[in-house]
Amino acid sequence: MKSNNNYRSKLELKFALDLEERGIKFNYESISIPYLKEHTYTPDFILPNGIIIETKGWWKSADRTKHKLIREQHPELDIRFVFQNAKNKLAKKSKTTYAEYCDRKGWLWAEGLLLLKWLS
Image 1 (cartoon, helix red, strand yellow):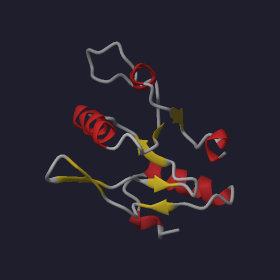
Image 2: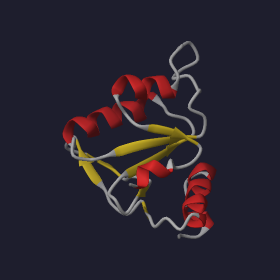
Image 3: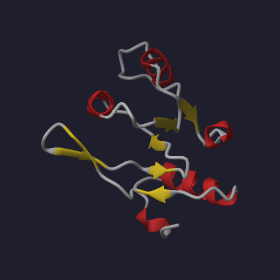
């Protein structure tokens, strides 16, 4: 594990500590995935089975657009989300939650911690 100062958020730190406590190996921000011509995406966590975990406190419109583009250009990647609060709304006036948005897109998500079934 990297030192606590190398994570970009408290959620990422909490997630990493949970993985360590469960004895789950992972890599943190260890690869960059190009999308479009001039952008790269650096996933938060990569599990040994190849699943990519993106942890999100706030999930801004630009991040959602980025993930739509990445999925279009890299359909072979298994990217899943762990939200600090999956009931957060996409925007102040939106009725759609992060969880509902993922469900509509067919994207797997969890709240708070890794789902053990994602390891198999």
